[in-house]
Length: 152
Image 1: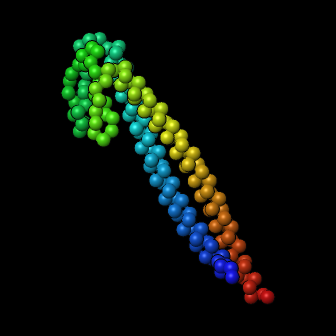
Image 2: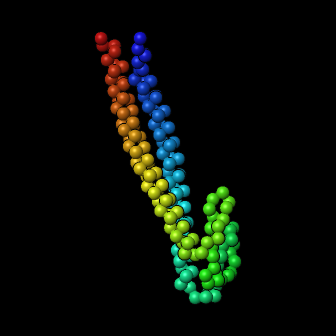
Image 3: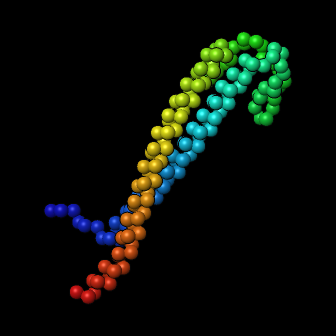
């Protein structure tokens, strides 16, 4: 005994639900992509700042952000180390060159993740497009079929 066949209307409804789920997934992936892009930019700026400190004259005053759009005036001591977050609230004190290297590695990993996400987004956009076309085609054909039923 085979499973009952779905009517065209039921198939359209299922496809519309699937389409909505795909669109929700796409929105979530786009949000993740935006977060990764922001994170990559943040890490890159930190790296550029560390590298810029190497070329500034000793005692040059800088503004040090402490959060809430609040800054301290200060100067980085030559050869001073950097505190860098490792995750889970754990910090490590590293020499500037090592911290810069770690930031560069993080940017590379973030970019890899971002590219992978872009691939997933492209694939999902393709599914959405194909499913949308199928639903539109089925919706156009459905009234014709309904009209044909009475002519038998």
